[in-house]
Length: 504
Image 1: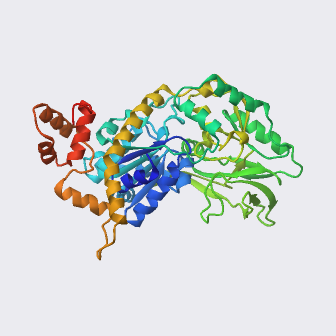
Image 2: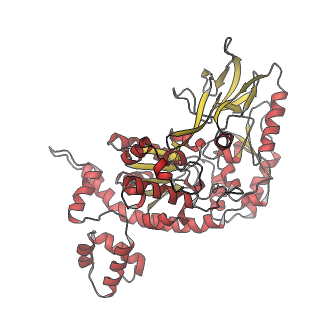
Image 3: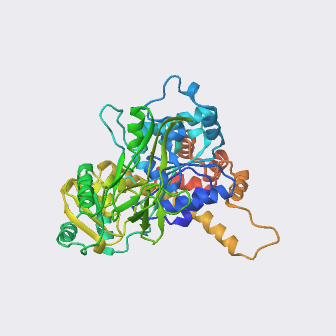
């Protein structure tokens, strides 16, 4: 599916999953949709599964936004404790965005659904809110920690089948310009890595990056990341400067918040240190993931002055991260939003685009880790490898099975929505009349005057009626009138159930 059609479907008000390979522009499209929806007066709540991912879109975590916090279930008094402010936010929301959906547990999506249904007093999925999920199931899965409730991908949630989101599977690649790297990443997604793919990657272990060039390294375990950053820092001349974070809240909440905060508890740097911004600047002076070098320290405050790779010098002052349970602030961390950037973990790199990277996949321990790491760069010439193990070239069997279903669902969405988009474009290119043509939303509303359920998800009850009446000899025209849907929609749905040859 192309971005134009995907955006049109999102703007129609349909709940959807926006997916596709790394580098296909999911975040760009999501930002475009958010902007256009807000321009049309929609109240859009932007969330993500981790604090790090949320910063890319300027949003909040879904756990905080919904009020479910760090719990694995809704307590008996959950709704009694939910604040008035949180209820008002949920009531006013027209569109809920959840980014990096691959990392959200299935049971937590069900929890969010329950919260919205009860608060909004609406028994439709998510209380009638348009839900827009974005992510790639080939990337990192939900983390199941000891002592916590385990779960799987959100497609296994109870509400998924009820919601039946449109699947918008983006195909065009924007990040990778190198055909060899793109071929390897595509082979990974199809679990079809061949010997020549492995040999191409192994050849990158024999090539060293240019001397004296600061390159961010990706490693699979925290201890390796810490060791490299400490060694690199120690090799620099000059005096160390340290910045200790300050916190509020109980230890358990602070520890939970710390998992989503890239800034270390004690930031130790020197002049000349390679650093990375770990939060978006409110003034847009830098972005989360921006790389720079410490060039000096402000005389009075001793805050570091960083020259980023775009040439801009910025004095980095402390920023604040918060963990909220509804409107109740459970914990906060204040720290200079920097970390040493000679090395970061693969997990923390998800969502980033790096100009150059040196990657160590010898200790990869979960499926998808190799795919995430290798897809951070644009071409093989800027990819350097310490080594790679077999696990790094493996993909989750669940992700493979899910991908096949998602691709088919996306193809069905293209067949269903493409005629309407083409008709809209034809009318827009025709000579304009005195009256302005209506918006997409207005066109949907006009169609629903004739077909009340046009472009609405198929409910199980309607599906059963469709199949039963068709078997008993009902015509497409009769089914269209009975179910309130366009004849083309009836035909496509019947083809899905009975095959293209059965339905002319």
